[in-house]
Amino acid sequence: MADQDTLHRRGLMFILSSPSGAGKTTISRMLLEADGEIRLSVSATTRPRRPGEIDGVHYHFVSDADFDRMIEEDDFYEWAHVFDHRYGTPKGHIRAGLKDGHDFLFDIDWQGTQQLYQKDQQDVVRVFILPPSLDELHRRLMARATDSSEVIEGRMERARAEISHWDGYDYVVVNDDVNVCFGKVRAILHAERMKRARQTGLIGFVRELMD
Ligand SMILES: Nc1ncnc2c1ncn2[C@@H]1O[C@H](COP(=O)(O)OP(=O)(O)OP(=O)(O)O)[C@@H](O)[C@H]1O
Ligand SMILES: Nc1nc2c(ncn2[C@@H]2O[C@H](COP(=O)(O)O)[C@@H](O)[C@H]2O)c(=O)[nH]1
Image (cartoon, rainbow, N blue to C red; front, top):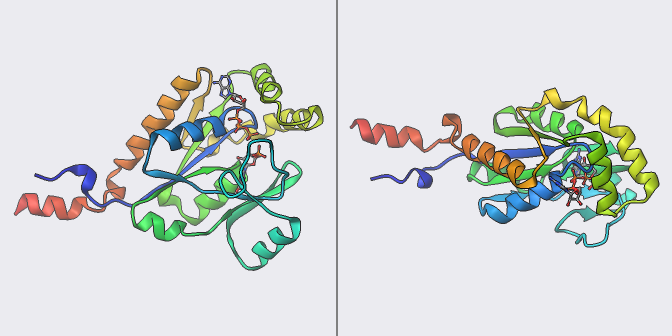
């Protein structure tokens, strides 16, 4: 008897985007902790490190010159200017990993999402996270206490523009209660893994069933 979980499938690129402070990093960390089959795509950024962030784990913190060099050497799957800095997804082993059935989690903005989708529609799953209100978004950015009030005001000013890209996503989830939101995001991941087109091992399995 076949166990469906052992059938071969293509991996997927699971993207979480949101206005800054809505909670995508929180949901990403919960997902990585709960699900052993998905790995984080670690972005490169020119922004300064926040307290508690580890180089190579949360981001690859690079200089402007290093970022320029990475662009020149075609090292990025996608990159974009976000706020006052540059962020990019290093190609790494993503394409080979997808073929081997590994899933990758991306915490990237709408510009990066569009670029990844244009390159690889079939493997991309796009999830947008909304805050319950703009007041709550502001409260969360303040409570996180990782950015100056100037930076927080800049992020609030950009929030409406970012939210306007909500319709470029496959799923939209409101992050009011974090556990409820996490449950919904996890359900999306599970369902997307079950898509017939991703379950490449099904063809052989069905053939055997019919014989
Ligand atoms: N549902 C929630 N209720 C209350 N606080 C939350 C909730 N989700 C996340 N937070 C808190 O809000 C703050 C912002 O969350 P987080 O850093 O995950 O946002 P983000 O969308 O990743 O922001 P950025 O784009 O700036 O990295 C954090 O302090 C986090 O603990
Ligand atoms: N297009 C990309 N956007 C990225 C990438 N890595 C992160 N981001 C987005 O930047 C903002 C700000 O992040 P923060 O950590 O400074 O708060 C946020 O929207 C991220 O999703 C990337 O590689 N490409």
